[in-house]
Amino acid sequence: MNDFVIEANELYKSYKGRPALSGFDLQVRAGSVFGFLGRNGAGKTTTIKLLMGLLKPDSGMARVFGSPVTDARQSIGVRRRIGFVTEDKELYPYMTVEQMIRFTRAFFPRWRDDLEKRYLRMFELPLRKKVPALSKGMRSKLMLLLAMSHGAELLILDEPGDGIDPAAQEDILRELVALAASEGTTIFFSSHQLSEVEQIADHICIIDAGRAIVAGSLDDLKCQYQRLHVILDRELPAPVQWVEGAEHVHQDGRTISILASRNIDNLLEQARSLPGASVEQFPVNLKEIFLEHVRTN
Amino acid sequence: MRTNSMLWFKGWLETRPRVAILSCLVAFVLARAWMKGTDSLPASAPLNGVLSIIWVGFAVMLAGDGIRTQSGSISQTSKGLVGSTHFTLSLPVSRFMLVATRTAVGLGQMLVLMTIAFCAAWVFVPAFHARTTLAEAVEYGAATFACTLSFYFISTIASVFLDYTWQIFGSLIAIFSLRWLAGVAPPPRAVDFFGCSETDRH
Amino acid sequence: MILRLNHASGIPLYLQLMEQIKHAIETGALRPGDQLPAIRKLAEDLVMNPNTVVRAYRELEHEGVIEVKHGSGAFVSDAVAGRMKVIGKGQAVMQSAMERLLSFGLTEPEIRRLFENELASSAVETLPRRQK
Image 1 (cartoon, chains in turn purple, brown, green):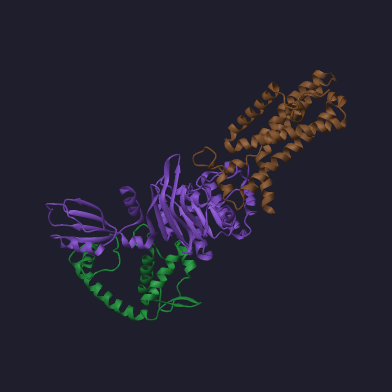
Image 2 (tube, helix red, strand yellow):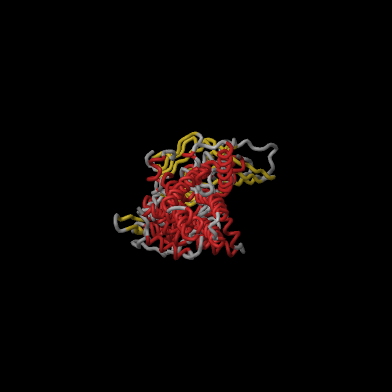
C-alpha cells in the first residue's frame, strides 16, 4: 500500500448537479509510467485537478505521497515534489519565457540547471518572447520544461502533447523515458493520443462517465485480450452461444470475429468444435481495447 | 526568501499597467489644477472633488485579487478557476502568502502614488499650498489614505465573491452607496469618511 | 543493435523486444559473449518504458538466452551456441522446403500463408500470434 504514489478511492465530484466523477478509483505505483485515457468530458481533468488540490472532492479519498489532497498543511511539501502541466497551458501573460523560468525556479530548491538548459535548447524556446506571443505548442513545451526541470519525483501531465508536432513529441517522450530510467520519476499523464500512451506507458487506466472501467498493466491487458477469427465451411442455423469472455462478436455469413477479454483457451476450444472451423488468433492493440470499453459503456 | 521576492516581482508585473494609468491620471489632474492655478476657492474644490474619485479609483484598481485565486468553492465559475491560477496554485506556496503578497503590493503602490500626489499637489497647486499648513496637509493626507485603505479592502473582499470586472463595478457600487448613505444620514465626525476626503476644511 | 518495435501491433512490447534480440542472435548480429546495451540506454534509444526493457531482459535471462552479471551488465549466454545448432538444422530443412515450394510455382505471399496456417493448426502456441 505504501508503494503507491497516487491513490484514489470512491471519488465523487459534481458541478452544479452534473456528476463528473462517480466513484473513481486509482492506484499509481512509484516509478511507473501511467497513461490516463478517456473521452472528452469523461473526468480526466477533474481527477487531475483533484489530485493537485485545485478542487475538493464531494466525497471519497485521494492521497498523493501518502498525504490526503485535502490536507492543506502537508500539501505545500507535496507540491514541491510534483511537476505539473495544466490542461489549458496558461501561464502569466505579462511575463517572458525567461521570466517564467526565473520565477518558477525560485520555488524549487532542487532545480536542475542542466535539465533546464537541455530542454531550452531542445524545445527552441525564445527567451525574450512574452507568453501570449507563444503558440499553443510552445506554451506546452514551456510548461513541460518548468515541470521537468525541478527534480520532481512525480510528474502529473494533463495532455502534455497538446499542440506539439510529432518530431518534438518524440523528443519529449524520450526525455520522459530518460527521467523515468535515470531518476525513477513517476509519470502520470492523460492523453488523447493512444500511440504515445502505448509507446511509453507500463500501466493505464481508462475512465468513462466518471468511473474507472479498465485499469492495469498494459502488457497484461494485451495478453488478456485476443481477437479470434473463425471461418466455417457453412452458415449456421442459429447464432453461437459463446462461453464467457467473448465481449464483442460479429458474425458475417461464414466468418465470425470475436473480441475476447479472457477465457481464451475455452473460447478457442469452442470455436474449433464448430463444424468445419478454421480458427486464427490475433493480438489486440490499445485502440481496440479503448474503443471496445468506451463504446459499450 | 527567494519565493517571496518572486511573488513581489509577479505582483509588480501584474499591476504595472494599472499603476501607469493611475499615475497619468493624477499627473493630468494636477497639471490641470496647476494651470488654472489661482488661489480662489473654486479652483481647489474641483481638485479635491476629482481627487476623491481618483482615490477611490486607486483603491478599486489596485486592490488585491489574490483572494480570488483560491475561490473554487465560493466563486460562481463552474470549474472553479481560470487561466494561470491553476499554475499558481500548483506551486509549493501557501494561499496565505499569495494573498498577503498581492495585497501588500497593491497597498505599497497606493501609498507611494498617494504620497507623490500629495507632495506634487503641495508644490504645484497654489490654492492647496497657501491655505493649509504643512501639519494640516500631512494630517489630511493621512486621513485620505486611511479612507482609501478602507475602500481598498472593500474591493479586495469583493474579489472573493466576484469575477474581475464585476469586482470593479461591485466595489464602486458599494463605495458610492456608502457615500450616499453618509449624505443621507451623516455619521459622527470620527468616521466621516466622505467628509474627510471631500472639499477643503476651511 | 538495430531494433524496430511496432507499438500498435497489440503484441506486448517486452515480447517484441525479446523476439528482436533473439532474432539478432540467430542472424549473427549478436554473438555469444557480446554485451547487450544497458537498460537505461536501450530505453532512451528506443523511446520505450525502462520497466519494459527490464522485463524483457529478465525473461531472456530466465530462458537462458542471456546472462546478467551483477555490476557489469547483460551478455549473450554461451549456452546459446547449443540452440544455434538446432536452429541450424531447422534452417537446412527450411531451405530444401522452400526450393520445393518455389518449384511448384507458389508465390511468396502464398508460401507465407501456408506456413502460418500450418503453424496455427499445429502444437499449442504460447505466445500471441503475429498479425498478418
